Image (cartoon, rainbow, N blue to C red; front, side, top):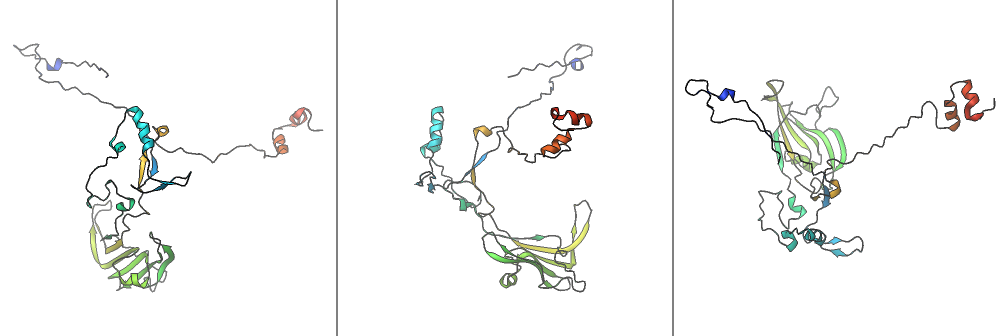
Length: 295
């Protein structure tokens, strides 16, 4: 503990009135106390593979399946008289609830954190510039793919990705799909979107935008429909964060600078050129290498 002493001037708190002259009139004193704390960042952690309870792992040295072994950690803790419930095989009895899908529960597998696809709808700005073609007579061609490619979704299912106008009633409304599935079955199911984002724009209707740096303005009414992927094996990662002793206090990964540049001056790497690069006048030429050159 550090002891800090401060002096204060109490002249303003002493009475100058007759009868109480020289007496302290204040009942309390306010003194600013500054607290500081020094702490070291524990540093970055190492992500260890997540192994579900009861799942067999393979020993790479012998190819023998075995269960998760906690004896290594237990043998490290016991000599230091550190005891934890997991060392006795004790687990918690927390009841799982669907209201908290991201909570860790004993025995919960990796797939237990996955969530299904859910539709997402909302109001946004129109994307008419994305579906506009170069044809001045017919800028919004129904069924014409502005862009098209063969893609694979997160489940590994191939599909034809395209951006096109679905229908157009003189822009009121105009419906279009951006980076979506252009298969006939997927198109017929709109606005229930399978892949991509489906828009419905009504240029005859507008809505007011407020709270921006540009003031209050109106934009065409545009709906968006999207089917989220939820949490799945392609966008979710589950691992145990482990603190390794040699990384304590290291807050970022090491940076390797591999763009090393060597300045060789005016000469090239050839030896003869390098020798001439050291010669500035006739005297240097005569004396170079103790008569190396025969003049």
